[in-house]
Image (cartoon, rainbow, N blue to C red; front, side, top):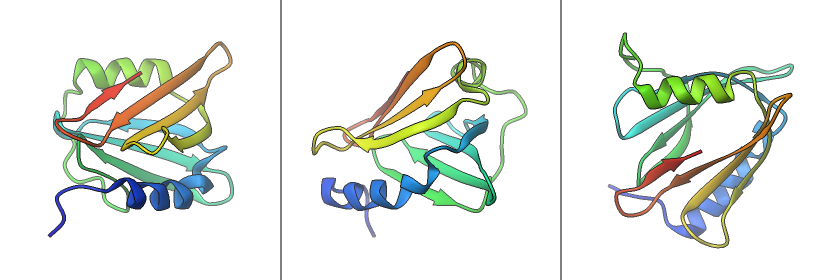
Length: 124
């Protein structure tokens, strides 16, 4: 069983996720401290869930799993900043296991980074 994505696998994942560009951030969940779940609305397609596991994986899913009743402060911060933001780009930084998602609101542009190596990290 795989324990993480390689850089070449991540490149192929990013290529498949290009269809999420121009989608709108609907909701953000943090089921555990190591996971983030983005609910994205795509025009004419509906809802898509994009899951990040810190330091390991990034993938689309159909299931929300159990969401805590009280969101974490980081999750609330992301919701406040990225709510209804439009995704303008999804890319791999150089050939590293780092994903960059560029999001735009009416006021500002945000860069969300997810590190998929070591212990991993989420940065806005």
